[in-house]
Length: 315
Length: 248
Image (cartoon, rainbow over all chains, first blue to last red):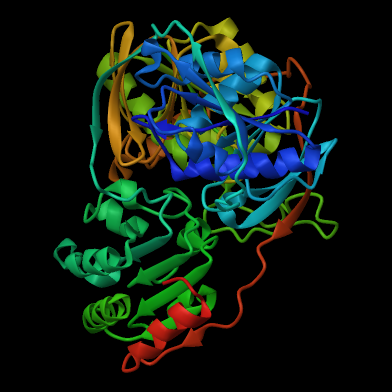
């Protein structure tokens, strides 16, 4: 039962989500008594990084035509080299665009947003996130070929070093239907879905000019920043920061919510966080019921003080 | 230009999610159904193209008769007509196959969808439809312009965005940002009245192949009771996060 994994990179550099997908693939391969083959498109990073998490074969696709992303062309490229019964993808934007196309191409079942190692391999059954984090589904694949996408920050990154070898495949996939005109990437900004810690704020902050203290706290923690839906709707923060049912679903180790009352739609997007801290001036805020730690008080005093104390802890 | 917008009927975003006693299915009792919010961004974008370019907008839903009020709402928002494939969808693949079958007979220039539904969160139907039709696919789209046989789509990427030129016909899956939240169309009385007489065609499913089964469902386990910390004792909060939760 050959296990393949798509190791996603950005500009040649592997993503944390790729290491998580390799870790997941290794757990599946151990169950199946087989090995993991990782597939990557135009990486510049060392293959040692993938051996470290359990991939013993690496196929590096080299294709100038794939310099720019196209879901269709990438699915075609991956299908040319990944001929396993199980293909693992991270649930990133790019990978979750490729996976459905590849599933149709190969006639495979596709199970997305997977949280844990499979409950059984034959038939393939696995737990996945559903109802925007308000429930779980145990999904069973029909047939033999399966593609899964692994929900980010769910399975975790697990070191499991193996020795391995690398092969370069030169492909030339047609990529004519789409053409990238421009590409803007803000440098140095932590990816919200990959972040271990997220500091988020809502309308309780009263205005966009008050976000400096949220960013200060995030900087001290090495965290990404996020916001509630009303805040992105009013335009205080970009919609890319909106976490919740219709925004991004996240699962960091620590989620700090400041001035967010905790509507059911917001909780849906963040309740997979391992630890939740709620800071709100309203002791009746419903979010406290879903939090691990709560502080009732004035955010404008608490956040700067908390930032200083964490700075002191980190020395 | 002919646009097809794929809509899914989903539980209202405020719904509490419960499962049947034997955990084998989602409990639909007491649920209000709405157009999947991410599909609503796609629908509004289509109506804007209808206004600016004279496009015709057809909505498609794969669902049983229970979904018809949601389809009528899409017509009230401004779609010209609708197709319902009479099938209670079991998985993304069976849904995608039905949509692709309708597209093959309809000659659509652009297929718009939300990037995922807020119930089963498969996020798979748009990409599957694109592949079944051998059309280009742009996911997580936060901007779209159409010019003749070409579209320019902006897609969200991790930490940024990318602008792409796409040959039509194509499948574009949108999300918040494709149109602003404030631009979402709330049906007025005229729209609601005219929706009653707009064509809603019901077609029987073309296939019954299912690739993934939902075997059972679990609710999210409740968290332990919250530990409250005094705002005058933030050292304690830092200690708890450092020593107990071990997250900082």
